[in-house]
Image 1 (cartoon, helix red, strand yellow):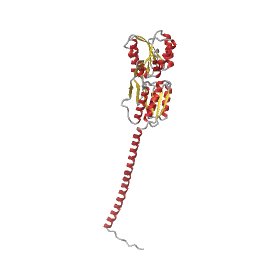
Image 2: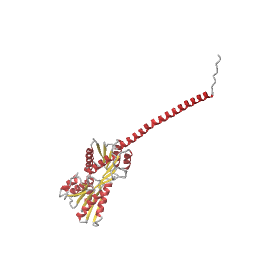
Image 3: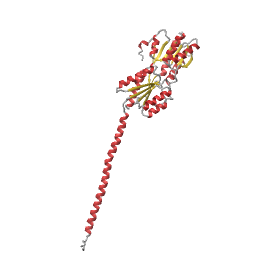
Image 4: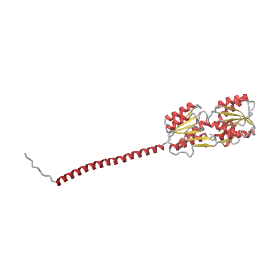
Length: 347
């Protein structure tokens, strides 16, 4: 079968070429536009995801206080019991069923380290501690901070990066206690210092005491021994001192518990020629001061419950995203004597 050839003019060729170019152009542009539209559609989703992530991080920075771990030195000491109660009181005021768990380290660094590590592992929101050793406790604090926990030191300073440090003015406590001794002795006499565990707070109290005595060259410190901050320690050390020294004019006890122990030692030895001044303002000290024939004459009173309440308040603020104006918060002390004892509210 013979097919008849149809001649193609140049105009027809131009028309066909134009059609092909148009088709290619449309296809190319369509693909390009689809790709651009696809990118445009993806970017808002990506931006939204990023913004959502940032908002989530911002919201978690302002969390809710739910658990508090309180690491103390000796829950057999009324001072630390008052700290525990202060934390519980402030937690109740904040509301929301905040759980408070207080533990005692018995002045043992290893035990206190384990307790902080346990609170950190348990995802405790706020850790409040009274440090046994300001340098030795640093690794445990660093670990807690690295885990995102809020850590506040009370009563004794630490060589670590904490969110706040809240303490009594311990130097002032030593100064006013020993100024009272100097005044009562009229600047002359033999004095015993019942020192304690070398915590920062105790070191500052002794330093403050010696600052006051430095103005009186006729006041002699005849002994400066560690009574371990306990009643038993005060009893033991003072009993030995009463055997060594036939006459003592005054005793500065770096905490009330050792002072109460010294008072008991004096009673057992039937010695009454001296008087005792402590630090804390504890119930045991005020009870001893009520006995007008007793030897316990004065105490530089702290506010342990107030320190703990402040710690919980500041800790809650930090969790809410509000940092304290100062990370070092000092609470003044007050000298309580037999003369003003009736106006002292106590712990």
